[in-house]
Length: 423
Image (cartoon, rainbow, N blue to C red; front, side):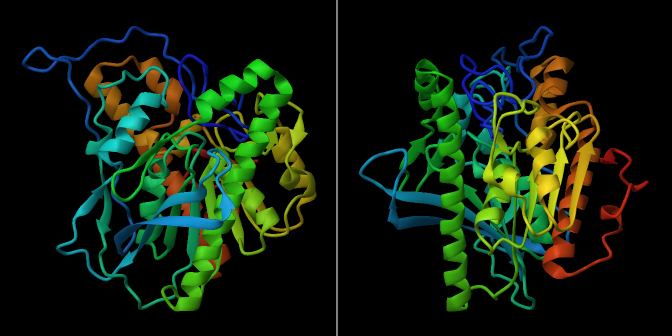
């Protein structure tokens, strides 16, 4: 299982889980530090320049609305902080009837951005030099929903240590194509979660990992298992809330899918294994075992050991597929339904997050070496990587949640996406 957030002192690579891999639990800081010399870009007044970024606009026919919700599971104690009920924040993206007069929302609040910057999820990026709260999404706050159709529901879970907003490119994209997308923050796992009223809860996983390291390998594996189990329990609680929305008529009843990156991809397939309400799941480079390296033989998750009956999609970084990732081979061999194993040539682990578009912009503005960019998001051009992810993830859910069997690029290699290799 990959744990995707870390502090630079305890983690050296986004491919390593908590000393290793987050679901494979890798406390992955994708690709590790760059090998070149970092120049400090200066503004006209001689002060260090601060980088600002833009996300790519979604391509679908619908405007995107959004609301953020606080959810409290009053039947479950918080697994990380004694004496509290489990509490989550989620973003709901949806097709909007109109977005006029409804402002776009930032990718992160200022408090969430400060927490993300403090954890420094991307290795060599300089702290305090990146305006993480200045990036705007294409989702419009409380825009009226379009109720002219039945919109399938898709849940999203990020990598360990990452905020729910680091998957904004894909969640906005799916909403623009007619999906209701619920992105989940896993409190005390995500770098920082801001609740209504301004209360902020920061990740506890770095200190949990340091404690486990002191206790030995068995404790590290136990932490990986706990982190995954908490994420699955969070997801099943969110599924309960979706069911309540169906029953109350706030959402039209529709099929439910799930996808995620790294630990979130693990959570998507594991939840599908544990809960029949997930009809289809896509795993973006998430290992399905509690190992220190993606390619190690080791303790498999139950979804890897048992497989699943429903359709699933595996998309890996360059070098990750079922031929050399034992947990992917296991889930493939033990599953009976439709499945695909795809590799995005030139990709790194963080290619499957918003880092794919943000990191090159940061590097240009701050004068970071080319090796920092390729170490984090690989050598695949950003526009091509984003187009391929959008195409395959959307086609997968179109096929299995909407019954559209004409997703031709799911059936074999496509000249439109030569970067994608079918395994």
